[in-house]
Length: 571
Image 1 (cartoon, rainbow, N blue to C red):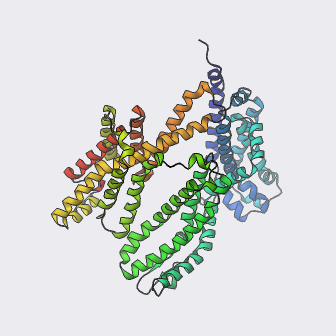
Image 2 (image 1 turned 180 degrees about the vertical axis):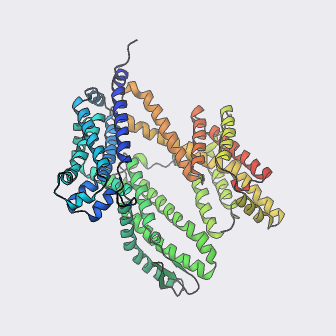
């Protein structure tokens, strides 16, 4: 049987892509190895650093060419990903690729420019002759070296993708290209990132303190600014005052809320009116500003009237996350319940709550868990409260979850056991934390200790697995799979590749939900691998009960290990 034309095309371009990727990977590694050649007068000062600080202005571009090249190259890779993701689902994309040939001229230009660049990075080890003789042939050659970097960059791109198509997209999306380049430059350049942080913290800090001062006075506190220590302002009362670091200005919360809302608007761009939805972002930032000032005022009030330890080790650690969670949930509610922001309000504003109810137990668990951490600092004595509230929500919404009750697969049992062994292998027991945990349990009456342990056991083995699996495998996994599938097959789906689209969507959804599952837990690696295991269990039969059972078995074995062997640090 003859191969499908699409399969034949993929085979034809396979070698060319592998060749191009291997070539530029080896070249980039070589250039990166020699990019910071040390000078002869100091092993701590690089060639580029010395030229940028002491050399004439004409050397600036050449001295920073590798950094500029890195920003431009990573920007182009991101643009390439966007182009391919948009064009891959169209039949014309394969015609474009089939017409792409590995040009011998591009290969020759790539080899020559790479050789010249590598030679320059090796030969120019001492900048003193260049500075002392700025008009010498060596200095002039080094000054025009950015042209070499540009030539090398274009030769690499031509090995991977048709230049004309990429540049046409850049011309049509100049603003998006500028935005990607700016973000990329800030992300990989620490000096630029620090400059932005210092700039915004300086702008936000004073008005935040002014508002916090007015609020604290409203609480009846004699708040004032004390002489700074270590360059940071000191705010509070004579009985309790704290240093206000740049992070307290609120720029972190604003950056997070902007990123979350931008990501949500992009994901829901087929549902939301983007030009209108983006108006929510400045109001969300303004709300974060006010809540941050309230947070500082309440922190001072708690420390002054009640407990400095609770203010610092309880409220201070949790209040910022509560502010972010409250603003994000309020913004989502506004975007989804207000017709002004929706393309088709009648279609999306329905009476039924749909699959969003799957998030309710976990949201309640996290939210009330954060609130309890405000009230206690040394031990999680209030753990039963979020568990009890989560149980109430599960009982109230039980009609939505009856369908998950089915027979458990043997694969779920095996995966639950394997995940337990993986967890204890990746996370060693902390003896000091275990002793600290046990001492607190021994300092209270036996009856209260057993009651707390009962809630902890029920929560770990039953409630937490149900809440987390409803959210991650019950809601997020199917939702992300549908989104990835629609992204790949939008407009003109390719029927010969539909099975590949489903496989890619499954894989991307598994990785996304597993990474987010790991973020939710204190141990990122172990949590992500556990998420992969529970995700595979769910994918095996598409039964949510399997993921819940695997998760519950893992936590039950951990509970046995905790109680029987005294490894309390796992709790």
